[in-house]
Image (cartoon, rainbow, N blue to C red; front, side, top):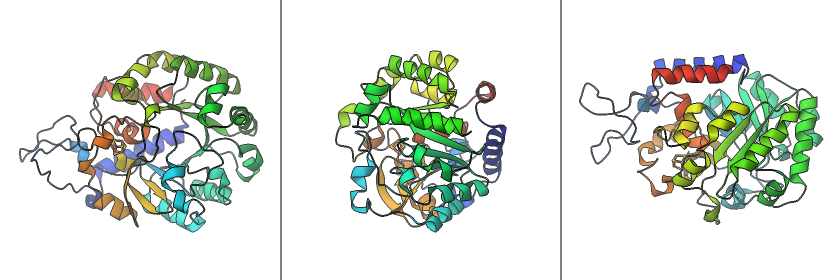
Length: 368
Ligand code: SF4
């Protein structure tokens, strides 16, 4: 199975419950000024009063909390916006209580602990076990440099994935992270974590210069370590990253992912086939950034992991006050080429624009 059964069943149950009984205060949409009732340009559905809105657009709820306990990092990767955008708060970090309050307030079944480098957070072990005690699933996203040093602070758990960043083979990865030896240490981290019984997956961003043949070679190389899955996402320009040249346009994304089915057939990719269909241009998906909220030292970041127009004090304020209808392709020029995992994978998971046959496809994928 691609994910532990408890994870697949728990998330499916959570989605089902929230679709049946959505929180009404999170579903409010202001009437768009142009009178067009479908701000996300997704498939139209007639409703009784004649407006055309997709039924799921009114069912906002969080799926994955991106929790950033701190923004400090031991690397300066060229595609990372955090070390630039949060320069002024780089030395600050959330307390353990603040992190757990955010986990409780949001209620998302999956928590991605990221940053910055989360293994620089002194209470990383306590934070992880407190989130696991709440029955949540965790992706601990790390560059791998401190894994061997701090592994003893964690216990293997069916709900915990150590997610190691790898953007290519040794030469490429060390170039992207701007330091020699990082790839080798990440590999040693994978080896040590697997030997200690942890679930380990990898996370790869695809940039303009990425050679997809090299990504295939990377996955082939990682087979020897019995890695539990790979996540891929097209890189997208943070407004805070200077070097926009490295990021992909929609056409670039289609080209890079045109042959993704071959990789899917040979390797355990954790992205859903519906998301890959979207990347290849085979289906429309709206941005569902609200399903992937980010919390950090400045508060709840709106609208998404990539762009920042506001930070709210509470999760309720994020959900209620963000003008969600103003974002997404066609609504905001900053979103024009965005097809990133954090904005669109939830749309696939939520079944937006899906057909009956897609449900079967997803089931086969999850069970494989
Ligand atoms: S389309 Fe991308 S950049 Fe725009 S709000 Fe959604 S996730 Fe953020």
